[in-house]
Length: 431
Image (cartoon, rainbow, N blue to C red; front, side):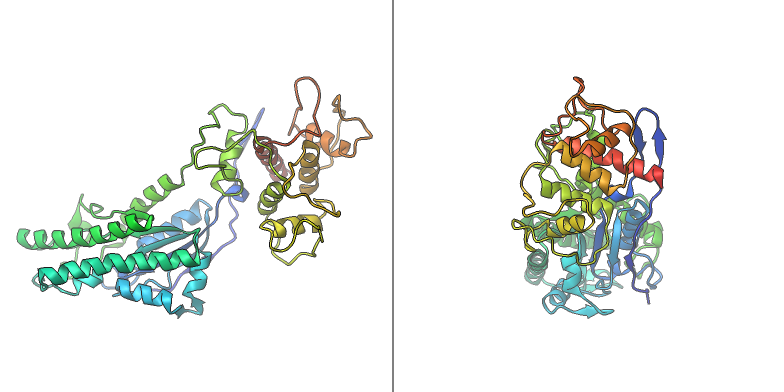
C-alpha cells in the first residue's frame, strides 16, 4: 500500500547573487509563495499504477516540483482513495472524515491548492473491462453524467464554504483503453469524453479551473498504458500528467501589471512580492506603484518576510488595533521586537513615511553602518537620522536628485518593495 505522504517543510533555498551596480537574485526564499497542496479523488491521485501497485502519482510529482522550486509548505494526499466516486468524495467532506489523524475539513481550510479527480468510477462501474462494452441504457447514462456534474459542483461548493480563498483544479481523464478493437475504442472514447464534459461543465458553473488530460498519452498510449487489463498509467505516465497540470498552474500564477513597465526600477521586487502574495496588486493587472503603502500593509509584508516565530505576542494595546484586525499579529510581533514603537495609537491606515520606512527596515535587519552621507533635509537632530544615513550608506537609497531624502513624504508601494528587497539581499550577504 502506498505510504501516505505529508510534507510540512521549512525550505532553505540557494540564493544566487550577482553583485555589480545592483544585486540580482535568481531565487529568494522569503519572497516565495508557499503552497499547501491537497489532493482529492480516486485511484489516479492515490497513485495506483499499471502493475496494480501504489506508488508515485501525478500529484506526488506536482508536489515534488513545487518543493524543488521552493514554493511548497505542505502536501496532503491522504484523502485520495482508489475506487472513489464523486459521491464518496462529497461524503468525506460533508461528514468530515479523518485519515491518519487529519480531519479533512481542517486540511481544506488550510489548502491553497486543491486538485480533484473523480467521476470515472461513477460511470465505469457500468463497463465490462474484458469486452469493453457499456452495460447501461441511454437514459441511465445521461442521469449518471448529470449526477457526476452535480456532485462535483457540490464538492466545490462545500470546499468554498470552508475556504473561499483556495484555488481549485478539476482534473479530467485520459483515454485509458488503447488496447481494444477500433469499435471498442470508439465506445470508450465516447464514454471518456462524456465524463470529461460533465466535469468541465461543473468547473465552468463553479468558476474553478479545469485541466484536460484527454490527449496526454496520444504520442504513445501503449507505452504509458501497457496493461490491457488495467486503466492506470506507468510512473512515466503520471509524470506526463504532472507536467500537463504544471503548465496550467504556471499559466494561472502569471502576473502582469500594466502599470509596471519593463524598465521600472522596482519591477523585480514588485513581482516577487506580488507572486508571493505579500503585497498583491490593487487589481488583477495593476499594482499601483505610486500609491502610498499604509503602516498596516508594511507591517504585514515585513512580518512575513522576516518569518518570525508564531508564538503569541504581548498585546501592544494600541487603541486603534484589536485582535480582530487582519494585521494584528504582524503589528503585535513587530512591536514586541522593537521594530515598531509602542504608543497610544498605531494608525494602521495612515501612509508609512520614508523616515518610518528607514527605521523599520534598518531595525528589522540590525544594520547600523554609517558613513558621511548627508541629505539637505535630514540634519543630525532628526529622529530618523541614523536610520536614514545607514540606509544611504548601504546603497539602498540615494535619495532624490536635488540632494534631499524627503523623510516626511509618503513611501510608495514601489519604493517599499524596492527598499525591502535590497535590504533583504544585503542581509543575506551579511550572514
